[in-house]
Image 1 (cartoon, helix red, strand yellow):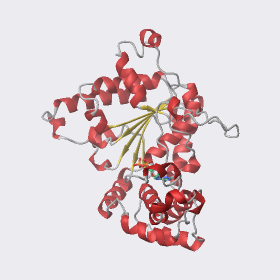
Image 2 (tube, helix red, strand yellow; image 1 turned 180 degrees about the vertical axis):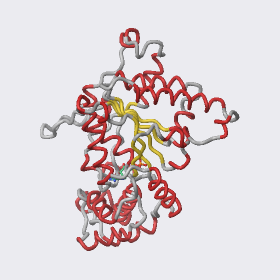
Image 3 (spheres, rainbow, N blue to C red; image 1 turned 135 degrees about the vertical axis):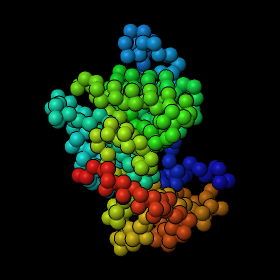
Image 4 (tube, rainbow, N blue to C red; image 1 turned 120 degrees about the vertical axis):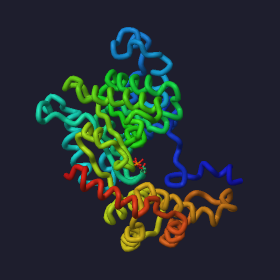
Length: 360
Ligand code: ADP
């Protein structure tokens, strides 16, 4: 019975999985009132062709299979993310907008001393919006968005990691403007004994290839529009000698109280709820130490509460009869969902920020 009712879940209760394959994301066209959303990134960026591989010097020598895998697994299509979707983080947003997005859109103005950064580092606790900002930059420049994490580079691409790193940067240049978003960079660029000769040879080779490519991004012609964004929760682990390659290091902290209130309001905007302004303020106070993604989890949990009570009669009622989400549902949700970031982690990040971070 529960299974039969799954399509009733919507909004916070169940979101449709988004596929990288545009054909799987097509909406129901039977309703003429529903305007079909066409993402400019999908329409403008064509998959790499056989002739491109043969003719384009950037792709010559790459195995077609690896390029196809890049397109399938790394090039993603961020459904339009706007700055308004990112709550709080005003300082980070301002720096990024001024020094990166505008420069990506008008590279001719940003040369010489005004040259835009080609590689930036986002650091901060997990779930605070680093990936979201990366997608937003790509989206606001209609750029190809490529996203990979250090752990998938070494686990899913065993034996091919170096070739992948090379191919990924070449692909980004070919399909520019592009944003490469590299998560968990600390595990690729951490200080290791391996740097003094010992250590893991495979790791050293991948790291060396990566640094060669990263330097390539910074050195390429001024009109090249490839932005490399590295993200980490553990910036203090990164080799200091490598840090200078990231000309901007931007702190993406936990949301402050006003941002937390705004996050709750945003997440509940399209849900049936009975929360007053004071109760929203109270949620902001209660969620001290929660990240944006923790708050999303709290809201999802709270949204499930009114349904759980009536789960045995779902087939007899309509969606409109689901009781509204109320403050008491949040009290229960807070009991289930705890903040995912510890006080020690925050302290380490704050300290690192005052030493190495870019202040707006
Ligand atoms: P990370 O910093 O680990 O890259 P993400 O950007 O992937 O975090 O955020 C995870 C999810 O949490 C987002 O998809 C979004 O739903 C929510 N979220 C986190 N921070 C914010 C924010 N500042 N504004 C809006 N949503 C946020």
